[in-house]
Amino acid sequence: MRVLDRAIQVDNTPATLRVIRSESDLRSALAQIGAVLALGLPLAAILSAASGYLIARRSLAPVGAMAARARQITAERLSARLPVSNPQDELGQLAAVFNETLGRLENSFAELRRFAADASHELRTPLTALRAVGEASLREKNGSNAAGAWREAVVSMLEEAQHLSDLVDALLEV
Image 1: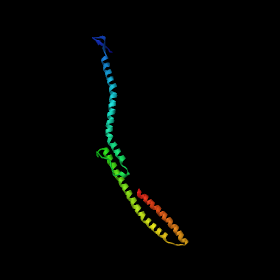
Image 2 (image 1 turned 180 degrees about the vertical axis):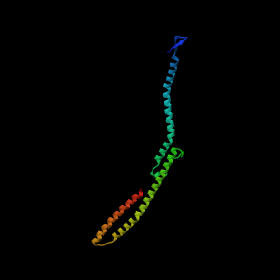
Image 3 (image 1 turned 90 degrees about the horizontal axis):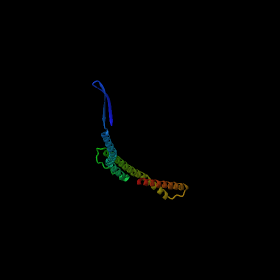
Image 4 (image 1 turned 45 degrees about the horizontal axis):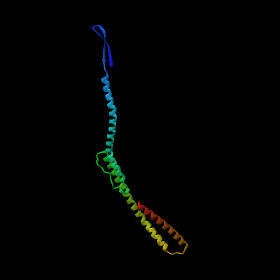
């Protein structure tokens, strides 16, 4: 119970005004509010977490699809691109930028292959001439000591030419 006392005067006579009120209705209402909060807050937290997880999963599904597609792109499959479902949103812009990067990378690989082919062609021409001259020199029959030294130089030259030819072949396989 709640009690309120006040000193008052009624017709110049001092008096005490006392009001007494029962708090049982208020305590009952507070108990109901407490029970609702005790049950409702954990339930609301669980529902919020579950719905947040579902919303986040659905929102991030395009990122998962992009990651799966990006894993499939290799040096041999640089022509593959990521799907761009909506080019106006952030994920679409990210996919477009990634696709542009893949295009630049594909062009770089093509230029590298062209360079390797051009370089090997340019290296093969002098190597072939070197080999032809060396083989022709070896066919000549000379009995002098200078010819023996000449012969050793030519054999060494041919070994180096073979080594360079092997390097060119390896360069073409790149």
